[in-house]
Image (cartoon, rainbow, N blue to C red):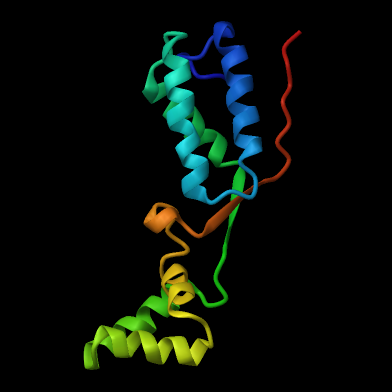
Length: 137
């Protein structure tokens, strides 16, 4: 099934988009999504709207999975840290959490929002399963 707003004239562009998506394997989600800006710029020269690029990218991303790069579940870590910060200073809360998890403060800060791709560069890495490009002949 193909959306009405995509036609045969888009095949070459779609192939480029799919190749770009596959090349993002192992990148952070934020870095992968930054690719869409470059693709949108290139698509404008082909009279393809930025919204079309974003829509196709969104659909293609549903074929991917992300892995969160954090030893502790970020949601649980946020809950823990916010509870600590409610009764002490932020610095003291960070130090207690850092000591508990035996990591640097920098690492702890990365883990806090590792499940939010757009937060501070995102900690989720993107991997693609079973993406295959089929050409119409």
